[in-house]
Length: 194
Image (cartoon, rainbow, N blue to C red):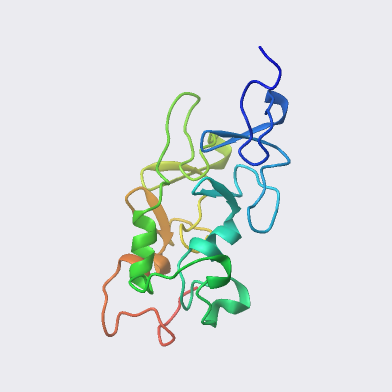
């Protein structure tokens, strides 16, 4: 094999050898190149969110491509008017509030995975062993992955709602898929049961 042959890292363009390889979306990266495009945080299989051939941490991905509006922010900026323009995000005015949850969910690619080696967790793709097994939405999940798809809140049998193989807390499920109109909002006047 000639020198310099083999897989090339899309970030630096250099050859990636097996000892330093991390695969994401069929691309091979060096461990040091497997970093968030915006904040330069090191990533692993649980923290990476690939988008358009770039890698993001979950926080930067949510800020740039996530749902905008009250209740969907991160930290103190949740009530701001920030549309993400500083990150290059051009807001789509048709995606606002609860319908945006359904739209984001419809475009997600998180589906159940099964195969050799026992049950596979649909959230992270890893093998699920009996000691960490949770069951919901006709899938087997790790206990640490058994969280709401939208708000990442830990779930149990009393707080679980599912739709098309994905799991939600009852609050996010209601906002995204429940009835719409006057009296059904999840806005400032709604009662919370958290």
